[in-house]
Image (cartoon, rainbow, N blue to C red; front, top):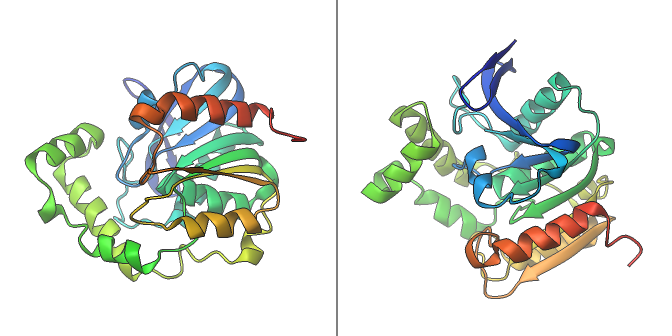
Length: 257
């Protein structure tokens, strides 16, 4: 069942109410935000991407407007949710961009149903949680949020403070998770999508060596390492460079080069 909300739609899938927006017309382009983010984050990036694309912009389970009664989240389940949304929309093949947690969801999607993704951009994604990320996740607690951070979270997430507390509990729990994100080179070798891997060489969560491992294992991959850049380095001063580069890649301009 689909219902309309103020700026988007809500569909009942996999035991949750998943919110999504569709903008523009043309080839389907799926945009997945990061963990604790929301689809609205893309307003800072999409620019003129509605020119030639039909943008599908969901809030992943438990994020933004989307509900998550179980208060549980894995990137594997998130991939199943997004496939269910695309099936509901009768979209078989698509292109995609994923930021951090959205990129991890895309890794699951690209290995679960490889033929459906034509091309994808993975920004600060990872095949696993290294120790440096687990140390940061250990400090990922709602008690550490300041007033300004609470204000940002309340702007993003529309189901109240309990939703935010649940997200931080899940994020903290990633430090003990070893099965959700555990991709081998053989797993990555199943990916058939043209893949652009975007990394900052100063990412505190994921060392650039993980990007190199993905680049070596994913058959049709390209690697863009942004110097002196941290986690998800595609906003602010990098916005224009990222949108130009990602747009050229998704158009297929790099093929044969």
